[in-house]
Amino acid sequence: MDLDLAQVRAFVLAAQELHFGRAAETLSISQQALSKRIARLESGLGAEMFHRGGHGVRLTAAGHRFLEPARQTLAAADQAVAAVRDEHRPLRVDVWGHLYAPMRTLAQVAARTGAPHLELGHGRDLPSVAAALLHGDIDAAFGRVHPPVPAGLTHRLVRLEPVDVILGTDHPLAGEAALRPGQLRDSVLWTPGALGRLDFLHRFAERFGIRDRAEGPNLGLDHFLAGLSADVRRFALMPADAPLPRTPAIRSVPLVDPTPLYAWSLLWRSTSGHPRLDALIGTFAAEAGRSRWLEYDPARDWLPEPHTTGFAPSRP
Image (cartoon, rainbow, N blue to C red; front, top):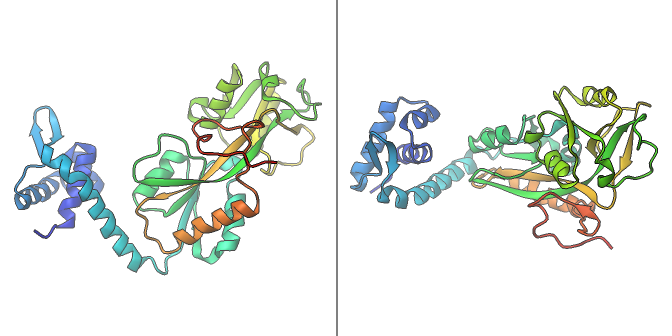
C-alpha cells in the first residue's frame, strides 16, 4: 500500500503522547479528524495500532513494530521537502544561557560561516530551545547541553571555557591572585535563578561542598553582579572570556586545582535537512581547533558528568 503521510504523522504523534486529544492539538486538527486518520491507516494496514479502552490508549504489538519505521519515514519526507524549500532560507540559530554571553562565540563562528546566511534568535533555556528544534521553528542552537536531551536531537561539544569566580571587593578572598574551588566552601554561591534549574552551578556546588546558596531573578548581568553586594560572602561564577562591566566593586579571580570548564555545544534536529547546517558544524569544528577550544586535562580541569566521557588529555 502507499502510505498517507498525514495518517502516519497522526499515528506517530498519538503514539508519542498516548493521548488522542493532545496529538490532535499538536496537529491543529480535531480529535475526531485524528481518529479518522488513524482508523484509515489501520484499515489499510489490516491491523489495529492502538488498544482503546477505559484505561487509556496503548500501542498494540503491531503499533510497536510500526512506530520506528514510521518515524524514519516522516524524517525522510521532511528532509526531502527541506532540501527543496530551504535552499535559500537563512539558517535559523537560537542561543540560551544569555548571562554567559553565548553570542560572542557564535558571532566568531558566524563571521567565518557567512553572517548573511544566519538568522539569530534568543531562546529562554534548553527545554524551550529543544522544543523549538523538534517543532522545526529553528535549525540549530548553541548553549550548554545537559541530560536529558530529547530523542530526535543531536549535539556536539564545541567549546570548553575556563570559569572564574566573581567576588565583591570586600569578600575575604578578594585579594587572592587565584583560588581553588574548595576555598569557597564558607562562601555563598549567588545564582541567577533557582539552583535546581541551573545544572552547571548545581553540580559545582555539590562537587566542591558549597552549602550556602542565595538565589535571585535573572534580570541581566548588571543586576546579577550588583546582587553580590547584598552579602560580603557572596560569589558568582562566570566564563573567563565573558565581558564584565568595568566597576571597582567587583573583581574576577581565576579558579585552579582544578579549573572548572563550562561546556558549550551545538544542538540540532537529527533529521534536519537545511543545506547550510553541515557548513556551520564544520566551521565550529575548525574554529575549535584553531582557537584550542577543546583542550582538557583531567589532572587540572573539572567538568561535570557526563562531559568527561570520551576526552583525552590535550594540554602539554
